[in-house]
Length: 386
Image (cartoon, rainbow, N blue to C red):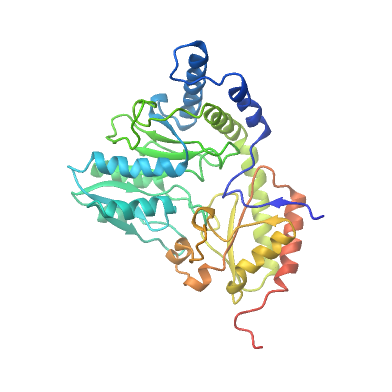
């Protein structure tokens, strides 16, 4: 039986055993509702506030500025819809990058049906937005700019501090989706008004995320009920998930330097090997200003075989991706991210994303490289003569 090798950590990560150990008591012992006044409830409430303070420490923000949600998608929806509705009297113009996660782009499509106007920023061939162009796009009706810190497909790291500075000068709110970067690289929030993070990308549990909302930021709640999360997000809190999220963040930040060094080494090894052994290979995104665990590539003349290559690797127990897991639910459309950087739809369907993680070993990397090199020999160019 072939060993199972997981190289799709940008989609989700394995729960760290140390995180699971921290969570278990909140399923079976400390299972109270945080809104209850008895000791079971106050114990749960204390766990939430301790977790909130931990995450705030890592983001260098105030504890009360962290609002827990059920996912990064919910946090992104809250950031855009909540600020749009709260600032409707000021203006109705929103600016986002063209390579945002689908939950941002689909939220913008909904906002357009509600009377808002959206500017979709172009990116260059490496996936970067131009801060100067953002400045030119801001007008008196602009209320919000949203640009993700790191792209989930190509790993490009955007200059959010510079973008945030421009927004601050213009009196416009700035939101950034940091789900891919939080816990992996430093995230500067000094010029960010709203920041989205989540748990399952950093070896924590699924079903929990957070939105950092700087004090004084006008925002309208989307969920109404018992008034949890400072009245901004009503719902009974996921205590075990929140505790696990905080523990996962703690481990990531305490081990970031060593983990980044190790994973960057594996990333460089893979890129070097693929460059030397595969003709016509080209990498998507910048090879320097990118997340240290991300590799995204296409093979010239073999783009039509991208999905087949993914399936051939899967047969050998190796999991990679052809793009964002969140945009592949029965939809075979080409990646909007890759098209935005200049690939045509045919090329954009042929990408392979390899995302390394905490549990990726040197031996697994070597086996992946050996296997993919062999499997590529079985592929047929769409342009070959039969």
